[in-house]
Length: 548
Image 1: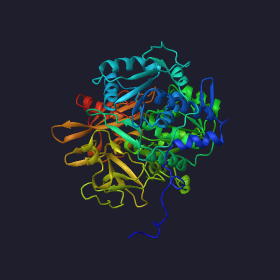
Image 2: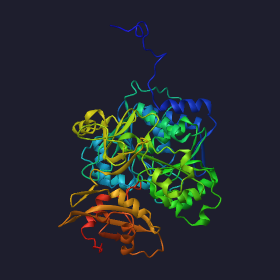
Image 3: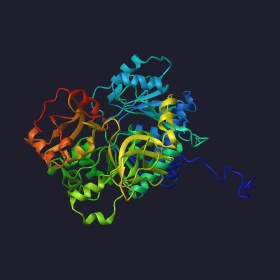
Image 4: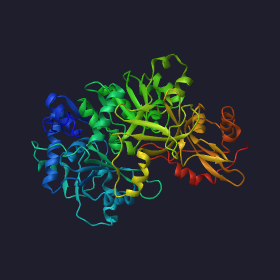
């Protein structure tokens, strides 16, 4: 039976439009056409100009034969063409594949083939890698390569393509009559996971999810109009956590940064009055541990967002000393970057640094516009007790969740089993609803039948004043099956010994959780600052034992 609310009330163009982040830049260009949009070296580009250039790019792509759902790959640092691609590519109806610029040619070749890219836009810094990747491609379908020229690039420019970016844009129409997607479920971006085991998986984003997460970013940060955002987070990583679209919605300023270096970051903060930035723990640690003189004159009140690992007490304290406001978020590529936030309460301000660090180390609660996040028993799919002890798996449900894995129906089906996205992260949930990761399911150390959370041990290691970074993995043991092996990166100039580290751990951990192996040295990290535990597992077998 038809409801009275459906009778003679048809959906039409006047009362329904697909949700897409492309509408953000259109509005901002109409309302604030002369507001600054992009800063890059001497370049100052307004939102009106950025919107026109995005339309030019879309027009040029269509004239080059790019059609709906074709893949356009980009291999770019955080520069203006990368910002423009986040709008121009989907305006053409195409799907943006932002390639990880730190990957080897073999991985890039796989992604180009698997995503069936029709176009690649490449920065001169990565032209050599792309040239090798093109030679390694298995599928030899025609591929249009476009070379970006950047005055801030100081190396030797190697031409790979048949056209330069500016010449290609000249062939497009700045008044191009683009349109919103026919369906908000249409793909807007393709992002590949790190691929630590086997080939990486292609994660497909839709317009609705991109817009939803971009708006949630505003709400979590109370981001004002015309925020000044410094690009320390790679835009190739989950599309910069959707912040290119967030900045367009707020008519903010994209302060571009080719390289993440402490001096360059502090200089940009002073020169441009930066108000917001995001990054992995390694980026925040870089700033906290920079020389005091380098920090002089940096504006107070800068809002920083951290994800990838819980911020230790030393980081929170260091950020507070610089006058920065740190927000801890959590997510995965499959949920558009951050999709939960450790929302802070005023009552926490009166607590000591140790207790504040404990509370802020939790992964928190769902983003405003994410439908639900729960810690569930993966066998029963029932919520675990909110006792802070019972472990389950973090699962997501809502618009801020991928369409699925490209050309991988079996893995997609497994990821969405039971109507939830399975993160693979094991956690507990507290009485206040906040949850805290205890480990990845693959990272739990089982020693003598006892489960040891590598994250719990890492949290203790970070409390040691001389520790800059730490990671704990399982080391095979003939008696216990597995025992914890700690890899520790020390701060410059300290002289701590492995025995000191073990003694510190004994003060805070049960005996069976204390690392029996401690290795000093720089930790292997991904391009986004995540520690590569799979590499450490390879090294763990040769680690020397410590008398515990």
